Length: 276
Image (tube, rainbow, N blue to C red; front, side, top):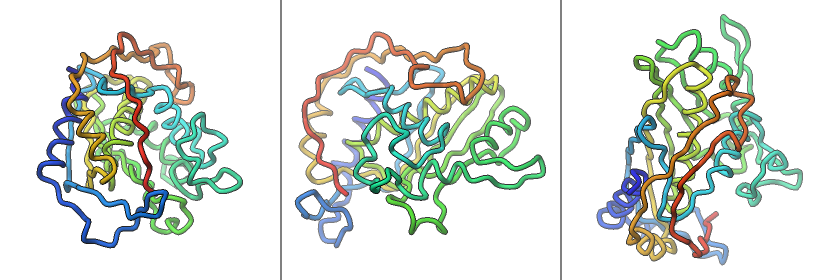
């Protein structure tokens, strides 16, 4: 089985068997019909993926890798907060009449800051340090800006990346305050694994580990039967995911820069209800 399947199955089983329900609390999220969207959760889940061995992608159901990468590039490359710059519809429900999601995600990465080397935004600072200061322990990004939270359509879930070069390998840690395991877990894992691969390549580094730290890993009440059915499936072996090696500029990557081969997956026809 693919390693991503094993991690997903083990994490979901742990949440379902040992998690804590919030049914006695007045929760903020609501289902479309107005019913409170309760969850069963585990605190501080940490999952590690060796990207040098295998790209993490589910076979229990299809992961749309190109769409996941497209959203990643919308945030990290285009540094956009407008859904009109995005190829998918994953942000439609949070956008205003002009397509904006407010001062969130790409907006925060695009803000320039002053350094002794000059003015750079957070992405360009990472790119600069990976090439010029790979030994630094300060290569990180943070988009959870308290000053702008009131002007964000949604507070950032995946809010911080820390990059660390060990030897000639680029390792990365994603810090996430909240994770909807069914709807978003493998989506985020694929996105930030892809980002780590892209940054390693353009910095002349080998890819290393991706570590995913989730403060609140949860399964929504209406998702539980779907998850229980999903994790009973027998996973396939992981597909082969490769990155176009000719690209040396981060801003030249596209969603088509990744190629996936021998991808076997189970059909998944369940409609996943979304809590907002």
